[in-house]
Image (cartoon, rainbow, N blue to C red; front, side):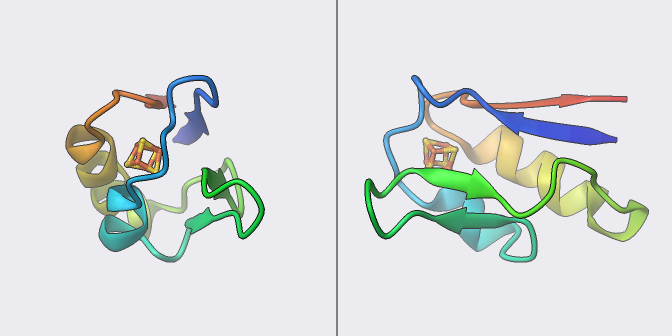
Length: 64
Ligand code: SF4
């Protein structure tokens, strides 16, 4: 599975970071989320889907 953040939508709540701190980080510069990797290992898939469901801006997209 792959994951991406639609930067224009992200406003930096940081909910994604709580759901999956292994892949999501918040930028010190602009407060927006960024990814350590777009490739989601199987063990983190559920956490990433949780982050996607929990993003209030629907800024997280996943693909197979
Ligand atoms: S939860 Fe969504 S809007 Fe908030 S920081 Fe994460 S990607 Fe951005």
